[in-house]
Image (cartoon, rainbow over all chains, first blue to last red; front, side, top):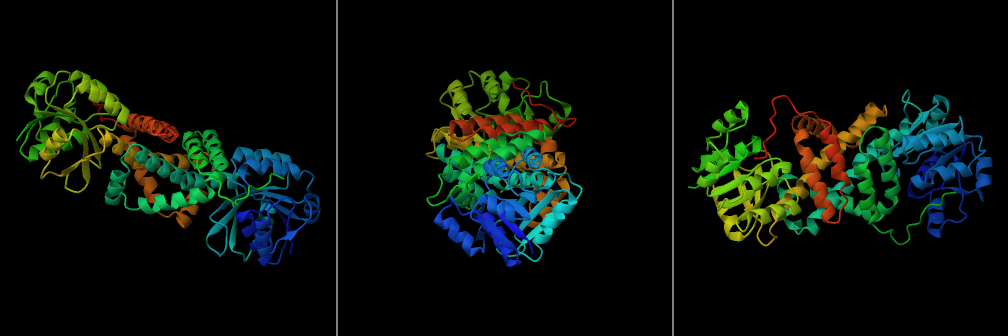
Length: 266
Length: 266
């Protein structure tokens, strides 16, 4: 059993930490500066407050960075000198992952999480890439947990981030596109006619629109940075970045719900 | 029964003309300058060559403009002086429709076609907006045909174009987004991993990707202008234009298939 640090658990980080704790690992986090709601969620997840970042880094064999994409680089910087395996599991472009790998050194493992916070097996995958040794060691931590860890062997050091970007490009990008199309129709006074036409020829879109609206209302403000990461990923891969720069604008229009705490950078 | 001119029948215009011809109307077109393949399709559709644009305009009570969006304004200009009902049924922004309405005068009817070239009832709608009198007169031409004409009463003069834009924003915009996401994954070397993840959590995407690729290969080059019209529509409606400027870039990368004729502007 290992000691694993999680920086900095929001809903996803707490669920990943809970999976590790249930498997018998000791899971550390840093409570300082976080809200009472976050602390209560971490306790429920079986996480232990290390007291400080330094203490967490000294005690942990593996650190998982699970935070907003904008914070990924500064979380890595704050962990400078950590001599265990550092996993960045954030929704960041492969370029940014490569920058963080450079910062962290040879024990960097790239990660990408696909699916909701894992509560039961089968919903969520943690993709891992990088040196096979450390990547497999990280995957083994999740054996028997609700989070399925998959090593992308032979796919390059930042393949996990690339896969996460390409996957979310559709799921979140298409949600933003649908929301924007329906809002444009409303602004142009053809909202009812669009819904009638959808009912005839695109009957799945009502449910898809409702799901997109509910997700965006809850989490849209947190997806702005991820959309910009996807835009940068597309541009580096020879595809236009405009889809996801537009999606960032759509999600930026959703206010942060009361009580939803921004995750600290370090 | 009326005499109706169609400017300038491609696949959609020929099918719309065929619907009118089957209902007993005389349907005119102008063969001059068009390919043998187009002439053969027009003949099969039961369309009559008027010999010249002037002759078509002199003989027709109604003119339908069905052409690429980039050509819509110049087709309308070339019809200057026509004193019947002029229907622009193209995939253009409401702003461009308003400009054409201004050019044409009070007998302008705005149109928007949703669905494939109509071969049998139930697949395709011709939305119409503008003055109720002329709009209803146009709709009545299609009674009993494979093309269902629907007047958007009380929705404003350019509602048909607005509806077409909002509808195609999703159908074609989402196709471009999916193609771009898969190409980005391929460029980043995670193509196989993306398809495996899709198979688990987004099983509908393989079929959707195949359909998007087939449509784009056949018609993508013709959708570039339509994507730019949608981008302009979004921006005028307070939504970001980037989705469809990016979609225009994606579709512009598809070459024009051999034998696919650009429709003349006038």
